Image (cartoon, rainbow over the protein chains, first blue to last red):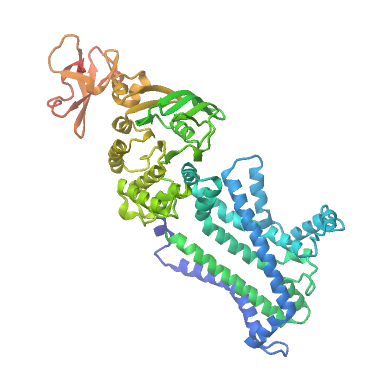
Amino acid sequence: MADQNRTRTQRGPVTLVLRFVVIAYVFVLVIWPVSVVVQRTFAPLNGQEGGFGAFVARLSDPAVVYAFSLTGTITFWAVLINTVFGVGVSLLLVRYRFPGRRVLSVLVDLPMSVSPVVVGLALVLAYSTGSGWFGESLASIGINVIFSTPGLIMATAFISLPFVIREVVPVLEEIGTESEQAALSLGASGWQTFWRITLPSIRSAVLYGVVLSIARALGEFGAVKIVSQGAAFNGETATLLIQNRYGNFDESTAYAAAFVLVVAAVLAIVVVNLIRKPEGST
Amino acid sequence: MSIEIRGVAKRYGDFTALENIDLSIPTGQLTALLGPSGGGKSTLLRIIAGLETTDSGTVEIEGTEATHLPPQKRNVGFVFQHYAVFKHLTVARNVAFGLEIRKRPKAEIKERVAELLELVHLSQFAERLPAQLSGGQRQRMALARALAVEPTVLLLDEPFGALDAKVRKELRDWLRRLHDDVHVTTVFVTHDQEEALEVADKIVVINQGRIEQIGTPDELYDEPANEFVAGFLGPVTELDGRTVRPHDIDVHREAVPGAVVGSVARVLRVGFEVRLSVLPDGGAPASRAVQVTLTRAHARDLTAGTKVWLTPADRG
């Protein structure tokens, strides 16, 4: 019923103008800049050769391989942590009423609004060995957070925290508790109910959140920039590599790495749409 | 006695949902908890199921103290108003759920599920998803799912409340017949007095957190304990200072000793019945008009202004 009213059947001049404005807007902001990156990736630049072979060669540079594998590691752990905690926090927010619930709900959104640079600074203040609150004690048991991979994972987890939660919470609210209660009355334990009933019901929301988190984690720059030493083979992630190479007259490698990130982002969007489709049709 | 409830009370903040409820529900019968919305009947059912905790008092199910047992351990079947289907599982897997949790052998589960689907007339839908079923079919599936674990008691919370009038009536008849076959102690919550009168062996009328009356449908209808029960179970009117049912009044066209004399103020036909408003003589206000229900045959040639004599009908 609602679907019938969503699209207009009449196509007047207003529709045409709106369409032109929207397309122009998207073109100027997104399509054109991204297409320049793609073009530069494969074009000869500053006397260096272009084409697909050169592109692959640039990506095979050990420093580039290191950067991407570091980004991969960080993304894997940050997303894994956020998926487990995201589902847990969502259940807590939706299924339980406790003092501070609304504060928690607001805090979960904080990473959306706070600048990643601030996040990085905050982590350095809390965990660095020099001035940090926990840094000294953690360092004494052999864990260095700042300027090492755990710090990068923490920073990335922080900034990608809301994605899973914001996808799962509305679905949990919508499905309600009745089928969970039905499972309980049929003899299922809380854990069985979660695995057999709750999780399958929120599965596509979790997947959607995970894909968004991956996209966000791959592209994170600000928080990572502060927490990482940012040198080649020493905490240089893909985004940091792009910045370093771009500033050090190795633009073609920067473009090649950027292109990989663009492809990853496009893949994420495709996956997200594939997940959304079957849901909309039922 | 199958379910013994003693001194059960429940409060939500300032709101008293249940107040000191004592109730015995007999084994093998179909008992209705009847009352207006927000009266506490669903809360009581959920307390029996263990889905809600009681603030005080005890609940005993088939001789087992169950007050603090979690729902998993009570062996009750619960059917929800909005079906509570497991959307991602087929009809057969929905019904099998309780048996799978109990780790019964595969062959036994298969056999039992087939049997239950037969019982609820859903055999041909076994491999469908709940989304492909109608509301009535979903509720029958939910019932089969609840029966699969062979519960000591079957609890139904407004089971037909979300269905349209026709399906509701069919399912109601079907539930009665099913209960005659299966004989599991059944408690169902409803706000529809017709449903309770038609299906239940015994009705418990609950209002504002208290039990108003317990009895068979006939007892409640013919000898309501108070005005509330009388009014909730069916229409009432006042004849000569007594509360009677509109269809328990005889209408005479000539003088009868002891009758209330009046004239017909309004005639309204609703399908097979005719409703009269009779204004007693002696200048009574319109609000004091006596409501009388007649069959069409008896109401012939009664029109507004006709003089009538009203007497309470003898109940044989």
